[in-house]
Length: 202
Image 1 (tube, helix red, strand yellow):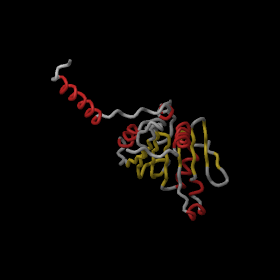
Image 2 (cartoon, one colour; image 1 turned 60 degrees about the vertical axis):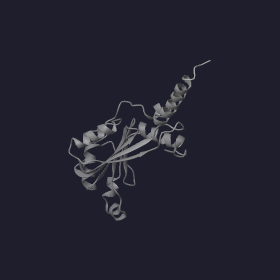
Image 3 (cartoon, helix red, strand yellow; image 1 turned 180 degrees about the horizontal axis):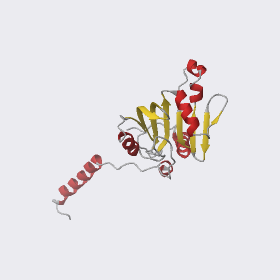
Image 4 (cartoon, helix red, strand yellow; image 1 turned 90 degrees about the vertical axis):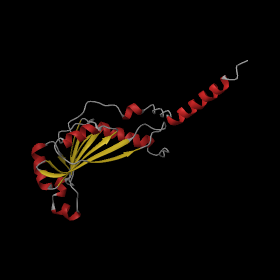
């Protein structure tokens, strides 16, 4: 027969285990496809001295080293075994010098990997003239938009349309964007597969 003094010790051990589990709960297991949406590959040169697959902190450091004030925004799903990690970060800088003018620069990240650089020029006409000299591969369509796709790199713009009197009358917002289509496809694939699932309870 066990001695009576062992029972208090056993009860104390069980209580301690329960308290420990409450204070330090196990983190949820990762979805088996998490690697499909977090892996890093060789980056492509986008714009503003940045390459795709750069991390968020690398983007911040790059901009702050050039003395720009950086606005951060984040949209993240709570962790859940039903879906892989999904975090969208945006870095915004105003009055950024690019393509002969200044404008709003936005960096878009999917799961800590830069996939898009988006520039809204203050002077669309100057931006258009600079683009024509620097990127002769852009193919213009009849609506005044232009695009170049080379392997996984996509460059697109509407500055020609925006700089016309018609574009100005319509209030067309000029843009130039550079994308790594591998990451764009990953983002879209995640949305198609898991976007309809409700958010987990935090």
